[in-house]
Image (cartoon, rainbow, N blue to C red):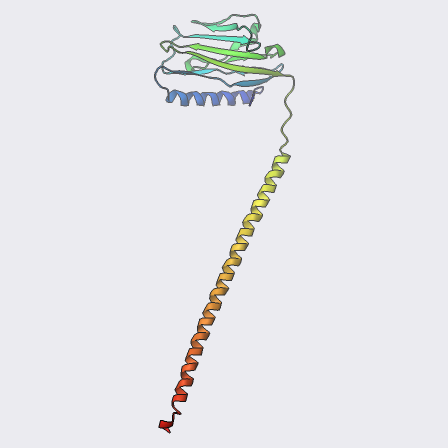
Length: 227
């Protein structure tokens, strides 16, 4: 999903997440590899300040005398890239497209190559490319960010339906659980009744057997040879 960056807190949160990802990748960095970390999409509000983050990870420490960076802009993926900022021993603006509205806001000591555009215009919408070269790493790093510029904020999502659905599902689950408990209790009660009935039948059977033996004993006592 597009990333909406128009408030300072949101930009700081995005930068923090990017830094955390960079740290994880750096700790697991294999030999001779580079990763450029950028958000795939950014939505900026017209007339505001937007920070376009770009960071990289490398197994080699950045050497300012060898390090090189290029930022380019394209209106579309088929357009020619317009280089507007470079680093070769120092940061150098290369295009009048943005004038003084674009500034370097990164930190080379932290492998942060981010830029900031102030007073964002509708014509700033397009593709931004961040190129990185950090010798002796042989890989040329490249990150692409699609920037969209809007004249107003998107409407907040209505969570009423989601809450209603969640409540309904929760109620159904509660009823289902309650039903299962009731059924289980009924079955247990029936089992207990069956066991009680069986016990009664066994006791009655024993009682009948004892009564039959007593009657037989009485009859034997009245046999003719005993009279």
